[in-house]
Amino acid sequence: MKRILTIQDISCVGKCSLTVALPILSAMGLETAVLPTAVLSAHTVFPNFTFRDLTADIEPISRHWQAEGLGFDAIYTGYLGSLEQLRLIGDLFDRFRTENTLIVVDPVMADNGKLYTGFTKEFAKGMASLCAKADVILPNRTEAACLLGIPYVAEGYNEDYVKDILVKLTNLGAKRAVLTGVSFVPDKLGVMAYDRQTGEFFQYFTSRIPATFHGTGDVFASTFVGGLMNGLPLKDALALAADYTVACIEDTISDPTRRWYGVNFEPNLPMLMRRLGK
Ligand code: PXL
Image (tube, rainbow, N blue to C red; front, side, top):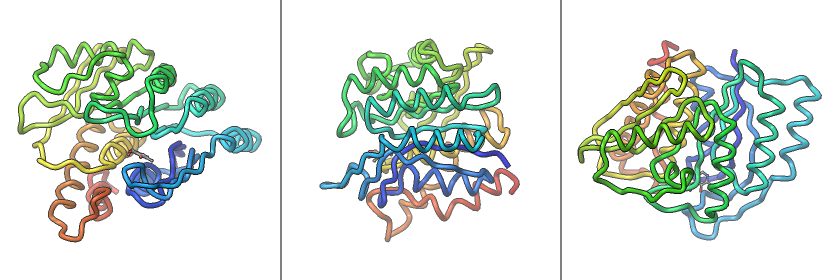
């Protein structure tokens, strides 16, 4: 069984980060180790959330793993809390990377043209340095603008513009870049990707659902990483992640008892397993 390490916060309530990544990756048949970067009472869209920083634990925990000879087939990072954490995790990549380790960085920090609470331009620069050490990065369009230090364009862009962004993203250092939240026509939303080694571009679009929910980026990223670790080619992992995310959003919309703070990813786990033949 492949073993994956995911590094992100625990938002105790919130259907995001580790509370999404763990069940999704487990359902996809992957042993999932975690390195929590912080414990929050709830994610940062809740008012008055508590935040316990775990930066000081990153090095001792990972040194223990090294002493035990533990390694990982993939390392996937999500929400990280500080510049110091970016530095420590870059160092962890260097210590655990082998020829066969897949390193995926989801540079969680912004959406809809704005940085999330607590993030700065300096953090975005540090995140660009962490992205340089990854094999695959998956920013949304706002995060891509922050990483590249260019203005966020809300609408009215075309395919050439997105391709240019993707090439610039891989110029940061990663072999492959996936850009989420791409839309050329109002009723379709999707992802585009670029593989610098083959020069190939990919795209996958679904119907746009007129609602936004928190945590969908983490659902998408976890499923995408799980797909790659199940041996799917990039384009199939993208399609699986997009279809599953859409199914979760549709389930949420049709649920009168839905939570405002996240999506119903749980009822759709069997669909994910079926798609993988599990
Ligand atoms: O879903 C991304 C995310 C993860 N973790 C925390 C967050 C957010 C987005 O706001 O607040 C704590």
